[in-house]
Image (cartoon, rainbow, N blue to C red):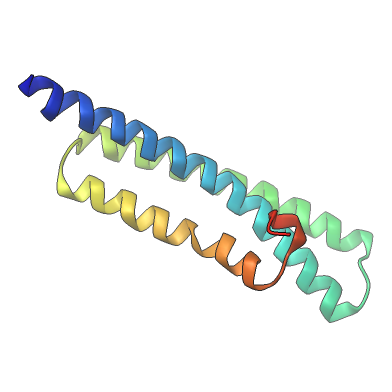
Length: 115
């Protein structure tokens, strides 16, 4: 029973939190693209094909950065499993990733699924 409480429960929670950060990070990339297109259309009063090209390049760059972040944090969590620094990193990651859905909500982006 001690093993269950000290190893299995924290490991399950860590895996679920890690999957949540991955899903939220991918959704953030989509929201950043939509926010960029909204700002571009507002500033230039048109949505040109150049905006879509820039948005697609932005998605590619953010995707590469996110893959690096995912591998780096996975390795960090593996080395520091069940230590306060690992849980703190989860909390910081989720807090930063929660900014973009909130920003999309307050910008009234229909693409964010908040209609």
